[in-house]
Length: 200
Image 1: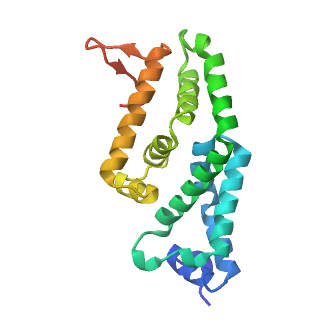
Image 2: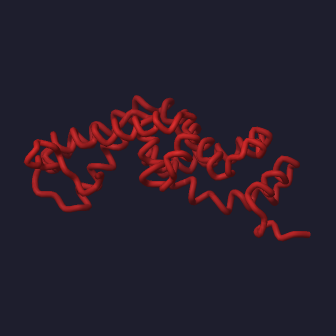
Image 3: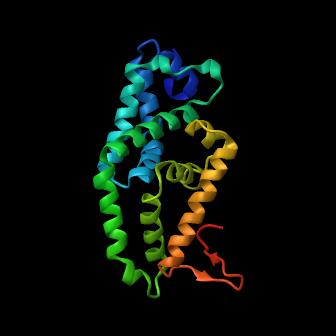
């Protein structure tokens, strides 16, 4: 009998579709940390991220036939989409409270952030502003910049074309620059454009 740990994701999924719990456990062990990181980037709450990933894997176990190897997508690319959709649904349900918490934090720290800031303080501000972005812009940033996916893979996960993804990234980065400039984190260059070492 082959060692399940040596099997590809796709071969493991074929076994999961035949109710092989051992194969499912290997996938969970192999990818929990990776997808927890992706979920956390979207919700910024440890417990919520854990719930999102747990629910995504539970969905996979209960409905393994939603994975279709014939479509050609890698398992990780496909499951990123499952986790991303799960996170978006989760955040929509929590959005009023979550958005209020984020905006309250940003507003409360505005004055101190306008002073000379250390790099870790700037990063914290940027993280909070990212959380306040529209969901699809935030997702695009997370997948491309934090998870390191190609535009093609990120677009596939989000169910949009590459051009649409690039437009989301452009709007997200533009919005962040404007807000960071307004809060005094970015300085104007000679042409009046804000510059940042965080996003080029």
